[in-house]
Length: 226
Ligand code: SAM
Image (cartoon, rainbow, N blue to C red; front, top):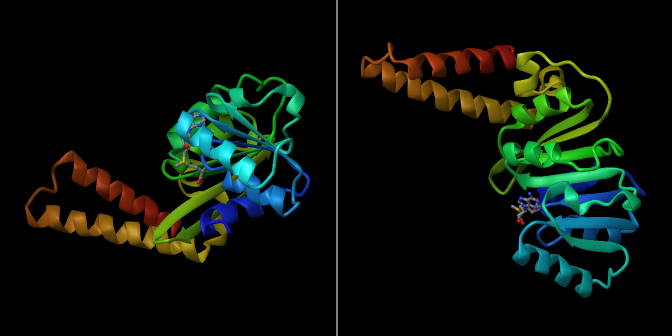
């Protein structure tokens, strides 16, 4: 049984995909997809020895030898061309780290897999990376699991242009205004407003931070069409 967060990531993996899950830790995601016979081959990449051992344990526990391959490697160096990987998942890390991993892809010239990314932070940065590296978004989703909001981005090779607002909030989100996404940004708006109220009460409207908060508030209001 996957967490709601990983289940939502799993839902975007096409049936029959040859998957590389980078930063796999326990390899719950690829193991689940293999055990459900949704896919029949996956690489689980890990840079750290402890999590790599977790992957090995998971392979043994579920008898997945030959179907799930564990590799101790930095990022996409875990993928070999002969794996013929067509889908990459990177979940549960900061957006900055995700873009670093994508940036250092040794196979970038030969293979352009579909990407299913779940950044915990800096989703806007990830959208920018996609635009600049020949990817276009085909889906995005804000999910709520165990008290936290998480975003998922799905991208395929192709051209895309995004305005600053679209990069920050998501082109599909802005049009569709999904409920979780609205709730997340309403909360963020309330948080920023309470900060500016406190700064104003302290007579500090002239400091740069106040202007920054105000600019963010305006941007969120624009995104939410308020
Ligand atoms: N993907 C799983 C999930 O979403 O539940 C595990 C997320 S865990 C918080 C992040 C994992 O990424 C850690 O096990 C860490 O060792 C691994 N990691 C961090 N940087 C990495 C890199 N450059 N290459 C491969 N794995 C990395």
